[in-house]
Length: 540
Image 1 (spheres, rainbow, N blue to C red):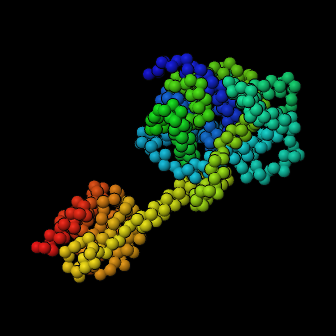
Image 2: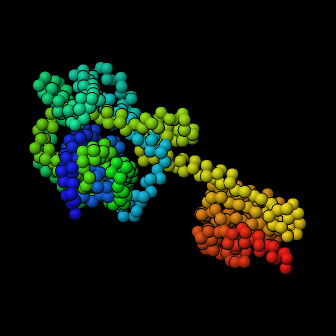
């Protein structure tokens, strides 16, 4: 149900967000290779559907820089296979729709809550890499030339710029960037990107400049590509599955990070899983009408909130506003110069780069700085999904190594001898008790140290494992404890457990270590209870 309690704020917020979204949607559409209209279609469908079904009431969704980069790679790959955009459109649409389906499944399965565990070096390297890709791909359009689709080809062809560049295009690009950065000093009530788009388009027409423009834009409502999906060849589904997974994962990360920003500004709490479902439905709708996939857009969401938007209605109004532009301003949009869009995208790319992370690269631990640089490099020159995957694996290994080191440092081994006034008074002086205190989870990063500790155990008669501070044991830790207990039992050493918590106890009971090896009588509520038991046993 639509909430109309904040009607005036939502109307103004939605219209303002639409004004900001228009030039970006057109620019991302051109960059993708499907044309400006694809960006507008995507912004309309995703903007409306994600607002209705999503889990963040103030979120504005549409094509974003990261999603446009991946979509462009998908489109270029399919065109390379099929020879033309017209021949590849079925596979492209299917890939975008499949990405939306994957996002819906991610939301239904509850995977959205895990996005918050993405390490900062991975996010930083990835976002900076996306920013650089956007900038690099606009180098040639900045000079009025067609850009290669691959970053490596961009660098390989830089020598051609000096020969073929269009100085009128260069001046337009520079003017665009200047307006975007300088106009806010005059006023922030009107988006500077829109001022550059409209003002320089009018100047181009009046001065009859010879620069490339968007060109013809289809009029009226978009076609629905259901027939295209039904008639296409599905014999090689992996051609679509892998890119679709990339888009789905990236869109999820992009959207949920924007949701966190929205929460911080509005002091609300978004529903991560519902947001993924809404984004998925929106991307399915965008794909079906030939639009670009997208995600929650941070800048547009912030603009919406600052302008008064507080409910889903603002996102719907944003999408409807763009639809009105589509129906009434297509002829004018066709005259927009591509160098102007290049200037807009360059500022977008510059805004995405994580300057904070790069600035502190010398101050953070070297291993984290290396991860950030690796992810950045892989993002720009290899593949976005592979970059995130490699970054996550490296970050996880690093984290486990650090946690293992911490567990080793905190694990206290205390041999106690009654003859030296130890804690276990009343025990035969020749009976030494070895107490191993664990502080933190027992997991695979700690097991090698634990096995070494047991192998080097001195000649004792009792071993006590203090488990009060062990909230969790994984499978590796469980087997390490099992091996240690069995080894100690072979050597005739009694093993006692004190303060064991529920999860570790359940794990040890599942493999029958309790009570078949460690009897119930060897479990104690706490260490003090164990000491009293030993004292009573001795006195009796």
